[in-house]
Length: 269
Image (cartoon, rainbow, N blue to C red; front, top):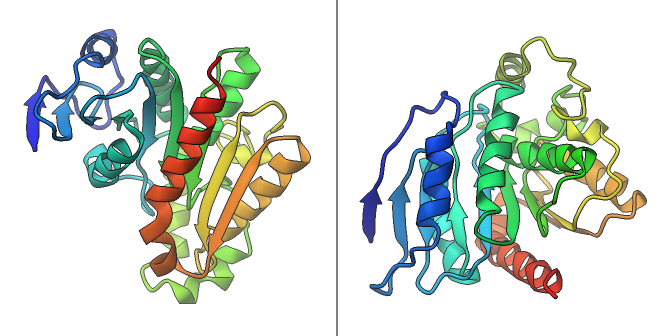
């Protein structure tokens, strides 16, 4: 696998104009060696498949600690790029609200310079993707073709019953630790702010959304409630609940790729 490095920034810094220009400039360069290429850029890793199409997938990483680096998403991004033919951008973003949302919004705007964009994310990254949909809709800005939300953290009030009911099914889950990280991320913001907790937003007018979640996931109720509210608002929703993470993970990239390809094609004239 090639690794072309063109610069980097710290994980908690804002994304400046130079980094965004770099995404635009290099997004037109496809690998010529038949392999997926992972490039470092000021905004984060960029994964390019052979013969890349004009579609860009903005993939927002996230973990249970509301942290991690975008490099943690590269393996999934490589598989997603191969299945879709899209360039996959894994951006860094700040570790607090609203800076994190501002960062992913800036990278999204840059990605639009190449062509159609799809959003995808996991946990906090999925929540940021949903928040970005709400912000773009409210601004009257062009929205992505679709979004995929995996094990999404969509309500930072952390009131969902599944956080307690499913805790025993996940030995690595610690509700007290999650509350601590959520408080740090939210800062002084109202936890019901729809741009922080998109489950509390008006969901009318959003593009098609796929939600992937395991039945044993402590965040299960976030996906179920969001899917119900989005469907009631006239949004096209593809909700997939698998019994557990073991059965969800093997098919997640295929499900994401099929959904993104279907809606990216449908959106074109």
